[in-house]
Each structure stands twice: as structure tokens, then as C-alpha cells.
Length: 165
Image (cartoon, rainbow, N blue to C red; front, side, top):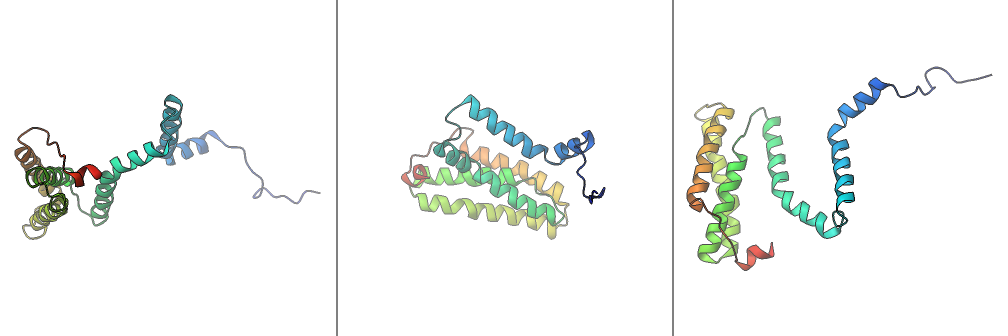
């Protein structure tokens, strides 16, 4: 006599449940496929040094994404994060090349980011401009500021503190 009920029996995987799984985990599936493909294409892809290099190169984007998540959770938009990052980066590079002081240069980037973010916050809260429009407009201004700082060319930093990073 069988004691199993229909609730405890396993049903075979249906096409709709497989498609639902693929839809729910599509990004994870694509990342796994990408890692497998790149590992096959290049034997040096899954080395420790390469993984550390990938993490170091993407750390600023992760920080920007996390902060953007908090802004979206609060019900607003911030389209200027990339431009603020650009201004902070080129200002830090410019200070490092002109003064040779890597500490001052590295401290200037978050300070300029704070100042530019406060300007955005001022526009949104006190002037009551919608966050989408305020940050879109400030993004254009900040990008232009970054181009003005660089003069439209690359800044090569050879200061010891920067090259150690």
C-alpha cells in the first residue's frame, strides 16, 4: 500500500516552470555562461590576479550602483552619478599632477562629490525641481566641467600614491 499523496509526489519539470526559472534567474544564468565561456576562451581568466583586477576596476561602479539604489528606494532619480564621478576623478588627477600630493588629490574626489551632490539636493529640495530633471541638467553641466578641467585630453598621473592604487 502506498502512503504517498499527490502533494508529496514530484511532478516532472514542465516547460512553463523552466521558462519561469529562466526568466527569474536570467542575469545569473548569463553571468555563469559568460564566466564559463571566458574561462574556455582564455586560461588566464579565472586566475587570482585577473579576478582581483576585475574587482578593482569595477569597485567604483558598484559604489555608484549601491548609492543609486538608495536614491531609487527613496523615490527619486539621480542621473548625475556618472558625471559627478567623472568630475571627481579628473579633479583628483589634475591635483595629483599639478601638486604631486596624492593625499590631497585623493581627498578632493569625495569632497567634490559631496559638494556636487549637495547642489543636486539643493535643487531638488529647496527649489522643488523634480529629481529627474535636476540631475539630468546637472549631469550635463558636470560633464562639461570635467571636459573643461581636462581640456579635452587625457591626464596621465605618475604620482606614487596613484600608481600604488
